[in-house]
Image (cartoon, rainbow, N blue to C red; front, side):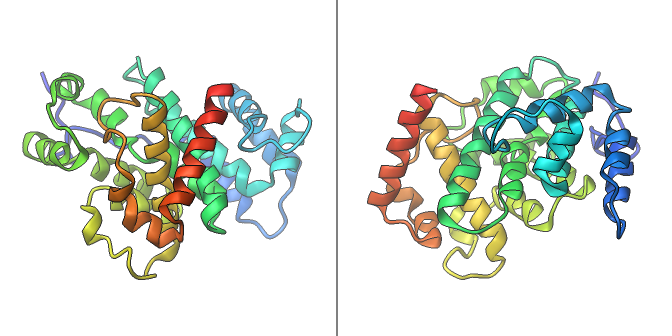
Length: 279
């Protein structure tokens, strides 16, 4: 039997853990005490271990391996540390459905590629690019947990690209997974440009106004995400629901916005795929 909730929706956005709320409160202070922040993080062993491990990944590490949480916080800075903490806490909260290892592996790959593309095409925050990559379709995880038939729906969907799939979701469930992803990001107080970029995925490309510079920050990280997904789909059949590798021609609005020629992008994609094969 399908779950029913007072909100009228068949899901509940998970609450932010108390440790995260307390750390955010501490970081709003005028004088931030690193030891106090670390002491708060140490109250949650799983978050403590995950933050330390993530701090040593290539995306965030810039030198020798850090072995203590204080070292990690000092090296990362508070903004990067908060980004890692938010993503880890959200990933934990959304993993109750189980069997989501491939889902989060794919999200991590997209996040890392989004950071790489962002560094090439803009001066936008790599923390925002990473957050967007990790959260861009996090609504799927929540829908899998809350809607008994959703996993089978994805497996059996005959949609060949994203827009028909979103339409099928809307008709079947009354909403689609990018709407749920956007709601999660909003409730977890993610940066405004990340929330906007997640929402942009639900609209056809020609309606996004990429020919102008309105909401430029959101559009830059959105475009980095689109190119990251294209590279990922070139490397592996990544998750079931995304577009197959797109032709470079279909990416032209994105490439025009970030100022890359088709030739430049193909070179970037080729070199990135070579790096992924080696690693």
